[in-house]
Length: 96
Image (cartoon, rainbow, N blue to C red; front, side, top):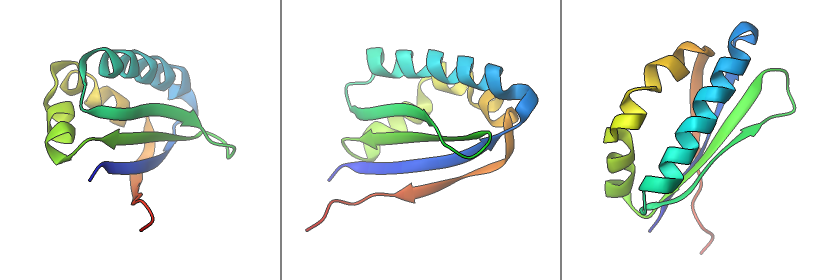
């Protein structure tokens, strides 16, 4: 079964452009290099400075490969540094 979730976050106003640049670059690398990634898309939410990323992987091993990818580990701390607080994951499971 695929592993799918939506992660919601709030970005510091002064870090918004840096956040978008980092996430856009990361998403391009994920799409180009991770066949086990079914979806990896960032979204701007309608609340101020609100963002979300929809991630879906074929399985847990594909998510682990994503988290271990050098282009991910190189930017994750910079992305987290743009956040005002932390993020919240909402797991999405298909209907029976």
